[in-house]
Amino acid sequence: MTQTPLKISADFDSGNIVVIDASNPSLTTLAIRPDTQSPHFQWFHFKVENLQVGQNHAFSLNNAGQSSYNRAWTGYNAVASYDHQNWFRVPSSFDGTALNFSLTPTESQVYFAYFEPYSRARHDWLIEQAINQADIDLIATGESVEGREIQLLRKGDGAEGKRKIWIIAQQHPGEHMAEWFMEGLIERLQEKNDPVMDSLLAAADLYLVPHMNPDGSFHGHLRTNAKGKDLNRAWQDSTEELSPEVFFVQQQMEKYGVDMFLDVHGDEEIPYVFTAACEGNPGYTPKQQELEAHFRSHLSSITRDFQSKYGYMRAQPGQANMNLACNSVGERYKCLSLTLEMPFKDNDDAPNELTGWSGQRSKQLAKDVLTTLSEMVSVLR
Image (cartoon, rainbow, N blue to C red; front, side, top):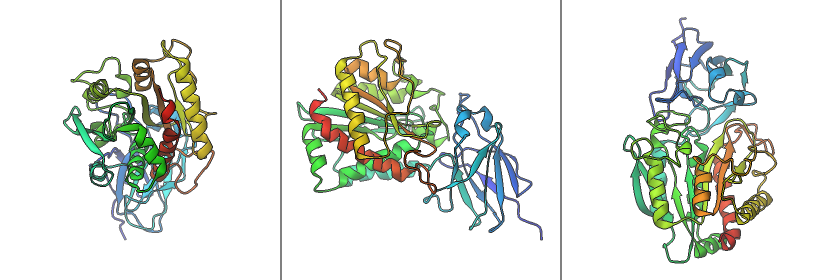
């Protein structure tokens, strides 16, 4: 009996794959498409149909060795889902050139991705949840290069004297764990009878941008917006033409002020959750150093999913890249300013063989971050 050829598609939200050779159903050769107007690539997301249940199917991403973070493939396992909702890890290997993984499916179709995707449809639902269920206000809306909305939400009344805590996510569009984190924040803000949140919100307003780079995510990019601009390298030279997403947020920050800033990301290589700070800034202060240590100490005391041993090499004094959001905001507002990184792989301190790091774990981390912010809000200034 002739086997029906596999059908492979990526023509959907955040889809990314190029089919090289699908003639052999037991081994399909693929490639990852680069970002628009940019050489960056790493994110993949595609659907496979006409699988033979019980038969092993292998897939090879043959340009993985040329990707933006090719060392990141070692120790990495791809994610898969039969229903686009429940994701699990698929054993994967990197041979220096290609990322290889296989599956013996229990259903005739499956999705594969670099990480559990966060769709634009779910983003729209999240905004509705924030407004209708969490009593969060939509206070401003910007536009991406291609005209997609970028919402600025505020939990709080904007009263004079309250601390202004800003949290933004997914400047890098392939880092989908960042909006899962934002969903966790908003989920906790919906809860009733939460004295920890009551204490935080009595002293601070939360300014939230759940998704900074909707164009890049929609097109299946790793790092850049629709103009090929890395938004987290645009905080000293943002323009309405090339990086309107950053330009909009900076305008709103000037309008409302900033007392604490958290920029939520994912890291391809490091299998831990960690923060990077602005110790290399020319105007770095002892107060900022003290607050950074306070944040790290408290968060690591309440969850195994955060640590401060592993992370990026610390910048030398005066040597910070000021185009990064964390450094730019920290210098401008002399506040606690952090980049929070979650892994694409797993957290080696608390591994989960089935899911690795996941959307659910990203959500829980967000709830723990809110506990830490509540504990330290009184000392932010």
